[in-house]
Amino acid sequence: MVRLPQQFTTMTDMHESNEARLRELLRQARPSPLLPPRFQESVWRRIERSECAPGPVTPLAWLDALAARLLRPRLALAGVAALLVLGGVLGAAQGTAEARQSARAAYLSAVAPNTIR
Amino acid sequence: MRRSLLIVSAVAVAGVAVLLGAFWLTRELCVRQLGWAGDDLRWLRQEFRLSDAEMARIRQLHADYKPRCQDFCRRIELKKLELKEGLNGAGTNVSASVEQTLAQIGALRAQCQAAMLQHFTEVSRVMPPEQGRRYLAEMRRLTLNLHEQVEASMAQPSASPHDHR
Image (cartoon, rainbow over all chains, first blue to last red; front, side, top):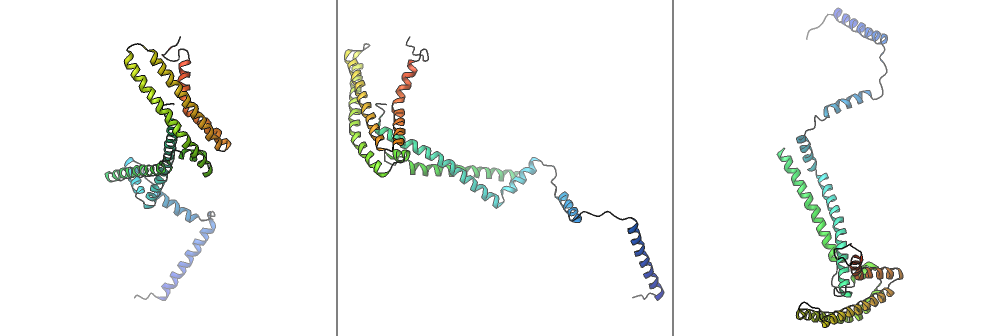
């Protein structure tokens, strides 16, 4: 390791000290406006958002995104459940109406045969 | 792209299959649970929310009425056979015996309908008043309206191709 002479290190210190004072003076001469709160955080957020922003939507990209979304277990499960409920409700309504119809027809044919209707 | 298309198509087909499967299953269950099931009077209990006591009384009335109804039906069927034979032997003319048979069929039908309406009235009396009124109106609509509609359409001038003027 090279040992610098004593005189040289003193000059370097002085130079650094002057530079710091100069920076301080410049800062005081041109005061910067106060930044809004959480400025830095919001800047990073905007950067992240711009990086994640989707490109132009094409049918192929849309299809790929849809396929990827459909394969998510949570979404698939919710879809199956919704279809089961919908099918069940519609089937119950239809079945109830049909059962009522057939029961009424059975009663009618028992009390009022077609011969006299 | 081809893989995505395949996935979306498969999911759509599976979705339709699940929907139709659930629909068919619940429909079948409801039809089996609420349908006829060998009891002619089941509709009455369901539709008019009758108690066990009311149903027992109605079952009794039904059991009394049914042989009378069957007897009328049998007699009407015999007269209809007689009418058929009369029409086959009459050629192009409507003979006096055919006219007589037609009148007898009409009279038998009228007696049968009167007995049927009497039965409906008796059944309605067993039900709570509001339900009884509803039952009577419904049965009259279902059993007599067909004739009323036909007669009404025939009575309208130039409403049908069968013009009486």
